[in-house]
Length: 156
Image (cartoon, rainbow, N blue to C red):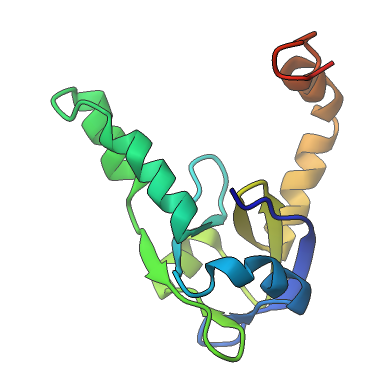
């Protein structure tokens, strides 16, 4: 499993291309040949960039859902809405398709943020707003999610 580290700022050009920062490109190096899947995020107005290996793992989980249950079928349709296969070109640029730029509200200033095994791609202003909005609740959230005494998972 890939585990990405860091938050990086870059710029998108008028065609929706962004230059992947060198430090991040190095972290992506093992996935560059296989390509990536770019999709709308479920909970935020940003995009999620999955290395193909991580996308395949996600699809294995989704393929186990019973499609004869309406909720499952609706979920699959919405989860995969707008999904695109993308590549980083030889110069290190990633082209974000127009419909995904519109969904995410990406303008010129972009933030690439690690989210464990995927990257989130944000319009810089929206990213800063999301971080500011979450700041006051973060201590409670951290306690609720990570604060249990869970010897099995090594959390304490």
